[in-house]
Amino acid sequence: MRSRILATAAAALLSLGGLVGANEAQPAAAATGPCGTLATAPHYTHVIWVWMENHSYSDIIGSSQAPYINSIANGCGLATDYLNLSHPSLPNYVGATSGLAVGSLSTFDSDCSPSKRCSTSTASVFGQGESWKSYEESMPSNCDKSNSGEYAVRHNPPPYFTTLSGCSTFDVPYSTLAADLSGGTLPAFSFVTPNLIDDMHDGTVAQGDSWLSSNLPTILNSSEYTSGGTAVFITWDEGSGGSTGESCASNTTDQSCHVATIVISPSTPAGTKSGTLFNHYSLLATAEQLLGLPFLGQAASAPTMTSAFNL
Image (cartoon, rainbow, N blue to C red; front, side, top):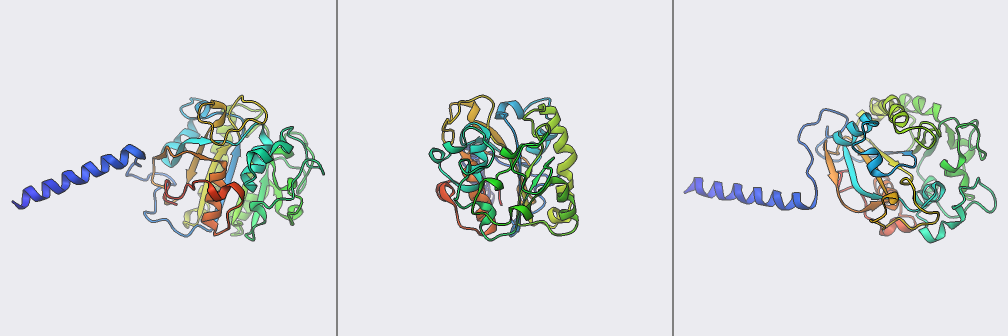
């Protein structure tokens, strides 16, 4: 009799697992990389965003040109239905860091450099009271407002926020990141932009993959990450193609709106995949939730990624 009861209970549990799996892909059990080392999400005190450029989900996931990226996506967390906000680049950078609605981002549709016309007085995640830095590869000087070589200011959002204080102090060349990681001075929120070659804008998918394979371990092997307090997100500003000013935040039919987003954290089980519809507003809401900050603009109504990736 007792054996029949146990067998019935086991069958019920298997059935429940099948129901859960129908809605959300289940993570692999083993943790052999940077993810899945903690069963319970800690209090995350650091959030790092790494932004890549101009490639749709299908250009990256499964690509033979991106073996490192795919190894991280398979060994950590992958949002499989994640959308950018618009086209071209700048509306995504500004919208994702401010929560401004797509309809309010047309000012930035020309990918213009910061100016009285091409800027906003709205609040941003850089000025919500937490410590922050933007780490910009190939930027000649702090908070540089002009394009220079492989540095594109349109991929560096802080200079576009006119009421933001501290840009000249905290918007810094990428080379300072390693020192902040090793010195225990990583800010609460970090925004990382590779240069035009390394972010895949002018370079290839293979070049971007190579850059990440050389640079991401500096973060993941640091005490800031291994101590359990840092979550890392890699995303692409927009998919390939698309039309200027297009509204992508809920457009599931245009592949130019569909980008890969990878979640790396000690508490994200290895192999986690989420098919929940997320977008750049979700990324903002997730960072704010993890850091205990109020939601800005569209982030207030966007689904966060914390539950799906055990953050």
